[in-house]
Length: 284
Image 1 (tube, rainbow, N blue to C red):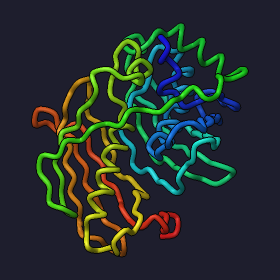
Image 2: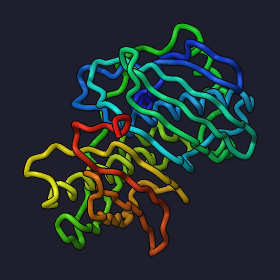
Image 3: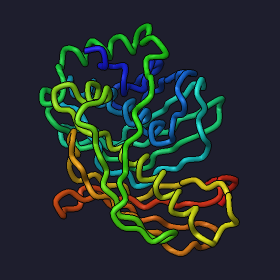
């Protein structure tokens, strides 16, 4: 499968490892891609934590997206830059893995994850344990070739209801097929939580840009995401409903409540702080 470890894998090498405790690694963002959003930087941190936990549990289990108390997006990452990844494992068992981590570019932190929790599920449901074990050995040795990632397709949002600058309901059209499904995961493809987050954040920023609070054409971004929870998988071809509600800005930042629903049931939730691009969370 050509997509495996190419379409949605963001660790090139694991350069340092204390088994079950901490690790460092890196990923080179290919220069040819159009962009590399902060949500995928968070994905890279989570993937490094997943490698540490899968190795610790002898490839019997693998973690999936669950909870993140806080994600802080400090700086944008540009194509061609190298992400230096660091994770600390607080607890790892056959039930879940608790961890935190960060990504740096040229020694400066670009993304931080705080108090993340990934539920463990049987490895064989998602992948071939022997193949994953072999890949880990490669990452710990010479590493994988750089430049494998070629970007992801734009995920379509179809508006259903909207009040400019206040709220949005839209249908998320998850593709039935896409290269990233072959990498996430081969035996049980699911829509990556970080692609859901990226789609929501872009929509929330567009919604905030319609507000009269900021001067027209003020560049906005999401500097912090809190209380992120994934309650169930989103499958290829599904069309969940995305709901965004933007509160009135306080001290220059607006809180966006972002929820995802399938069949009337909430399957994901997160809060995002939207504000001027010139003010990062570390300066607040």
